[in-house]
Image (cartoon, rainbow, N blue to C red; front, side, top):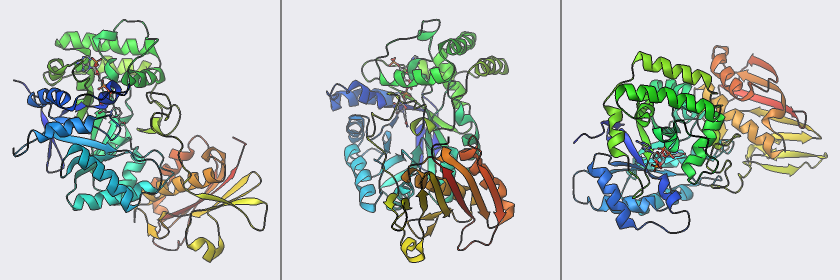
Length: 486
Ligand SMILES: NC(=O)c1ccc[n+]([C@@H]2O[C@H](COP(=O)([O-])OP(=O)(O)OC[C@H]3O[C@@H](n4cnc5c(N)ncnc54)[C@H](OP(=O)(O)O)[C@@H]3O)[C@@H](O)[C@H]2O)c1
């Protein structure tokens, strides 16, 4: 019997290149009735026996972790067992040792394992810096043997790079990657190539839209399942249904030529990127099962003529804006509900806004012990103007983030500036002036690129100078903003 090929994540995690995705369990359970764990585990067992023995879950995928735990238990005493990836997507806020350990322990308990094979971390807003605390604690837990490999999900290139520069041994980044959403093929894949991080691609079939079932069909008006609701938003952002039909038609011609399905073409196209370790294909347990067809993705190759036809269809589409993961952090939110209401209430401010004592204004405090000692604020708002202090990559009052990496430090600093502006009632779009101080002028490019990532469309006035910086910092940035002018 043919089985999906395998690949290694790090030195020890041997996975199927076609991972079975279990977000669909949450959708099937959304009316409040959970699936029978033993019966659902029987379905997973059929996947595992056919070589689809790697499963992807998350803390919020209904009872998926418990179902997989049942399956894993059946392999007790055997030398090999199915591989279970899960995710921890905590509410934004301080990531103390205790909070992180409780979050990870819950994954261990629900899966009934002594070590999570791959634990993927999601963070809703990089303006809140606690995500680095969470990853460092996960690193400590990895060293204790509680986590096999550490991954992230929906991280953009800048923050993946920052995490690596800050010493987090990341093995994977799970991101949306399909013929409709081709963002991951750009800078993110370049970083993966340079760093060895592997991508786990989801949305490869756009919830099933990338199949013969939708070829030549009118646009759906009412969508029942979460997955299709999400990817219909990607199709709309990608230029709409007509452009999508052009892509389906091109994929259909290629599929017929090779005697495979449109879904196989979509899967093959993603798997052919060197950065991609595996595709994650969602499964509606007990409702539909596409294993035999999906295996055919491994029995053919796309040729130059196929790539030319696809390139023509891509050129007619609108690229999905921004970088991977932006769809969870800024408009247009390309989630099932079109916002974050399925996931979160509000994102708390990272910093505190306080009235100023000697002036009618607001000051922003990070809580640093140095602010009262040295007598300064992270930011000050007087009427509509916000002044953000010279900001370095200082984490939790004292630690220099990403030592020696000016580009990564600039990414961290610009998140701090955005958080300071938000606390004072402003936005990054309100910035009218920035000043960048560089320890070594030779490092201008990565810092300028980080600045451009945030300010590329805002275009504030800017000064870039070499300066002797205090401490081990490579770069310091300050910003002025005028609220309400953007
Ligand atoms: N990290 C994240 O933020 C994130 C976000 C979304 C998803 N994910 C992960 O990715 C997994 C994949 O889910 P997804 O929502 O992205 O959906 P997907 O894999 O793009 O689509 C899955 C759907 O495609 C259809 N399908 C599968 N094989 C097919 C074939 N050969 N021919 C025709 N149709 C086929 C099935 O639809 P029918 O069941 O209707 O037949 C299936 O339910 C999730 O379960 C989850 O593990 C992660």
